[in-house]
Amino acid sequence: MDMNLNDQFAAGGDLIIDDLAGDEAAAPAPAAARAPRLPQMMRRIPVTLTLEVGSTRISLQELMSIGPSSVLPLDALAGEPLVIKVNGAAIGRAEVVVAGEQYGLKVIDLDGLNLDMLTS
Image (cartoon, rainbow, N blue to C red; front, side, top):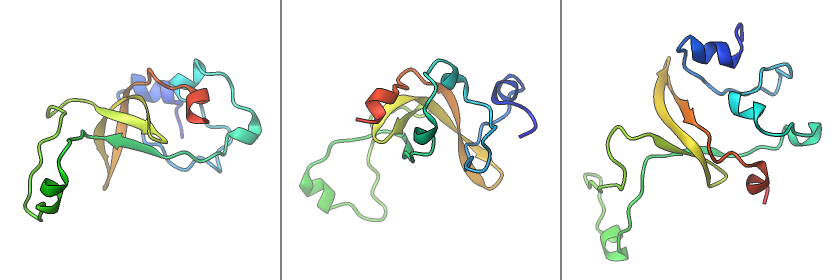
């Protein structure tokens, strides 16, 4: 990257998290400044990052009747930020952005980034 992540946020750029395995000198994300530094051996531990749009509870009977044109209402409002989850644990909120031909995420906040919770 030509600019660090803080400069990119200040410029209003979209953040795309890509495979940084070959980029050892990459600037840490803004939340990483608050978190303790990871030991070298832990830096490459893979985690699954997902965005949750919303959820709903339905009965098994309703589940069995879902088809290709079914619409299920979710508990989230349209335009509401999505929940960022790491290994199933909520760590913050984000919005979806389009980056070229792919979707990306723009982080709004990372209130729940707790490395102890993620490794348990």
